[in-house]
Image 1 (cartoon, rainbow, N blue to C red):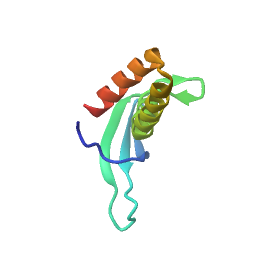
Image 2 (cartoon, helix red, strand yellow):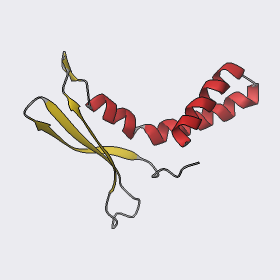
Image 3 (cartoon, rainbow, N blue to C red):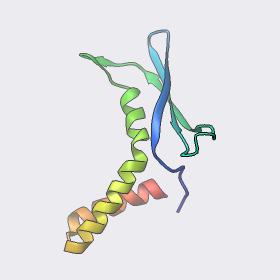
Length: 102
């Protein structure tokens, strides 16, 4: 099992390049505010606009930033499902946790 940077992660800084591409940074801010933010990744890609929403890469960055909380929610749901022996959701949760943890 790998050791991920602890959450929470959040989006910080974004920029446009030629009004066609976007770059967004994701970081972890340690509880000790004297320590600098820990860089997680930069998400880049073309901007696709649908109505009032900027779709990609902002949506991808939001999903990545939510990863630590989603992993913890999956673990909690798996524990809950195991209490009631719900096999279908258990298998899906086990796969998601394994993918996030490998």
